[in-house]
Image (cartoon, rainbow, N blue to C red; front, side):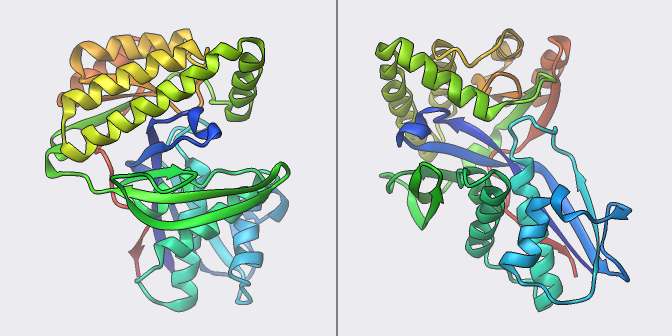
Length: 325
């Protein structure tokens, strides 16, 4: 038997601007996906017969990435992430399953997180018809704070490069990390889920159409990029006040791009009196917001009062890992 856990993710800065080559900053959160596998007489997933076409991430990992030839597996999946909320649940599944299968085949607790990140990205791309950013998969695998951009970002540590042939042509990314100072550990992230799904593709298309109608809005992408740089500087220095200011500013720019919603704005406003800063996280149109605070219980309560569902997490938890030998 093998069991592995991979965390979800939260984007702090760079939503939508990353599509235009600017950096996106994501952190791993405490919540995630756990996968348990054991040998069986037939292929089983969560008590039901395994259907490869219904589970492309898992099927691709088994057959194309690991070329698994062993006995059938009984696969059990559990998650404490909000579903379809922009927290990287499918990336966490791909990483956790890849780690569990690696351990089952190799019987070793030491895993190659870079290899798993690339495998998980491949599984995501296969499931999404050739389109997938490595942001979710790299953050879930590596843990901590990950910066994804078209090139190396000054002030970060380069980890690896990756590329993907998409229907629109080849895309290339640089995966970098930021070493978080100990003072960051004095703060918490509180995520608030609106209860509405986060339609990433729809929101990216909405922004593209907005820029066609109002080309002057392209300046918002440069502004978000500048806010991201300021946020990275604050992160590296452990300056929570400056980090919160950058989060607030980023939310206003995303509102200008019309990707926030009344529900997201309500949760953000409810959180701010008890936080350094708060913003939507991810593509918008639903999904989650995130607040940075030293008083997570109070912020969680404010989110609930405003109609949201809260999750409390440390900022930059550990990445994918084996949890049972």
